[in-house]
Length: 454
Ligand SMILES: *Cc1c(COP(=O)(O)O)cnc(C)c1O
Image 1 (cartoon, rainbow, N blue to C red):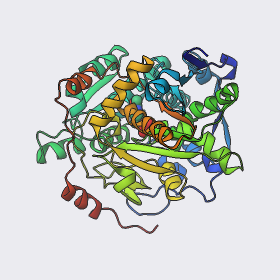
Image 2: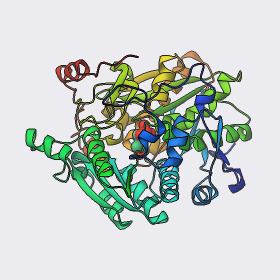
Image 3: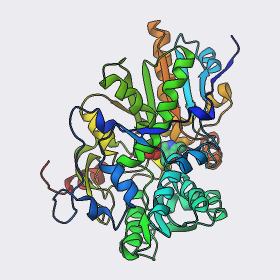
Image 4: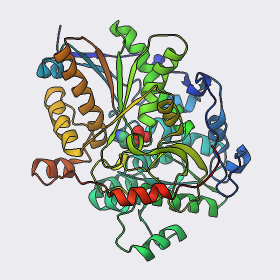
């Protein structure tokens, strides 16, 4: 057998429908609640924030939802994405495990995020929206929405977490190349931003703060809606193209994963690869071990509470039931910026609560070490976020060496690290440290959770 093994599908095999896990869960998804009254939100109450197409998907319990042809047509530029068998890595680890990875770094923005950005921009244009406001952590979501906005003729305003704005000037340049506006957050453009700056002038920012700014911006203008790159049901739905393709590719490989691993920031690349397989299991098909991997210093699933909480710092968003560290928790400024969120997708939280998912956490140095070992074997330098999946997959493969078991391990290589070279330079120069989050801050943020039933 040759060492480069990849499973490719034809363009015609790009899924025609997204998969909705809500149809197969043993209990209904938890509803979002009004931030003021604590009552379940009606779809019309979400309309100031989101376009109608995505609201419909947010509450849908249909198993399959058609992908609009204009969206599929743009997907064609980089989809179907390849599934690789990591033969060289297997040899380097001397493991009997069969390691596979689905590579989402081939999209024009370098990650899985355009899978939903394109869809969200499509539904916004359908709804007559002129402008989308959003937040971005590491810049991948802002880049993806900037790209999608340019394809559908929408204006894009991006609030970028300050620490990433400073660490990743190329991300800002990328967004501006597509005509988007990019502001460091906290900014003085919104009440939410000004409030934080008054208390903490040198704030590093957080996704929670940036979301508040973008939501405020969307609520102020009728022609502007808000777009979120992760967490919500419709975002995870759009990402299921990843897992649906992988299911077909495993047929080509005449194999089936025993373990599926993905990193979790807000849960979208995880839900995207996992849910089609989990749905198959819930409908009586093969069972899989599912592993969510998060950073040790933003340990939402491993240390957080499963409770209703706000999605943002200024408490403008609906309340959703999720694993959370508290909406005022600001994690240390580590390099996997896409994983610095205090909450988790409600659907991922629910699946974890139901016992379908095992959560684990790793320090960033171990992640970079694994990422480099992977790169030297497979020739792709992963994004720092993706390194969390890489380190867990390698550990699972090493465990197979010890036990002698030959398991099939699939992980989502959700993005490349070409915009993250300063982080790799820091790692190689020994400048990267495993900072601990502040236990007291976390306890305080958790104590401040809103009190609502459920
Ligand atoms: C945004 C991002 C993440 C984190 O978001 P999820 O919704 O958890 O997928 C992880 N990896 C990459 C490459 C990202 O761009």
